[in-house]
Image (cartoon, rainbow, N blue to C red; front, side, top):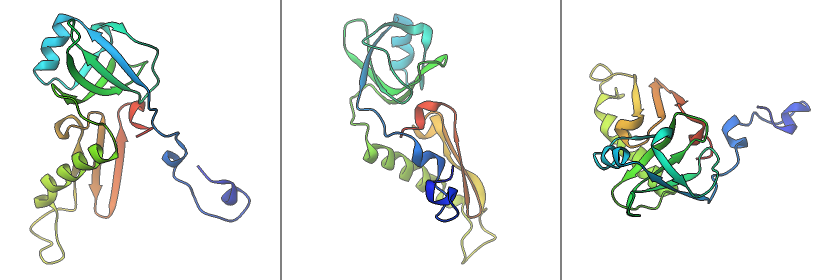
Length: 166
């Protein structure tokens, strides 16, 4: 997308994601089936639409969904997508956490650190590579988010619109 200054002949390009509204502060409360309770307790990264038995209100892509078992105990929190079969991409299981910029930064930095041994360096360009997957979505605790590195270029893939506000 181009900003207004660029459209009139001056200015710079504005990244499309910079135009996305900030994440909502809304939280949805969801209750799930017994089968979903078991899969979430075992660490599954997704909650499917058919597993939701109750929802506190309508949600928008990117709203945080707090998931409770049938007795009202916390199970998980994740990113909500109202139109996808994968209704919630789980960010945190079994214990509550603040889902904020610091949470995402910690997960991203951990993923980058795990992949650091893959990277070629100026001191030893033969020992590594300059093309690899930097963030592996579910494997890195960031379900639906993939980042590939090709030399100095990073390619971001969002597998759900729930990531766009974040």
